[in-house]
Length: 177
Image (cartoon, rainbow, N blue to C red; front, side, top):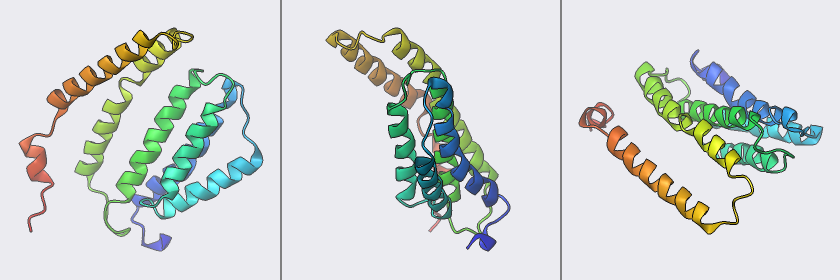
């Protein structure tokens, strides 16, 4: 199976395996150390994810990292930003690896499109982290939840208008059949 991968597929598959493990290891400065059995299972699931990027193994691998971070003594440690970026990079690599058969070379335009989208997703992460850190202990106030929901809705609406699908994008990836 791996002999059919194009040269562009190999780095994607390596990222798919290493990014979830690195995201867990990023929690060490936050006061957590993963158990060896957990890491072994994570690596095995990540390898399955790399071999079959469109499978449920991806959901399992990424959820394992998220659930593990939920048990970190200081889940708002700045290293959670690194973990978030690593999970997004892993997801992006799997998405690109799952486009077409293994022998299909990567389209640079498609890689650029998804890299720009990923950068836009990462853009607000530091601000969200800063707000969440500042509001630690304020979760009991219902107004905070309502304000957060309003801000999320407004941000989604603005992003949809600003970065919405354009006719040129639609025409570029339309199946000619």
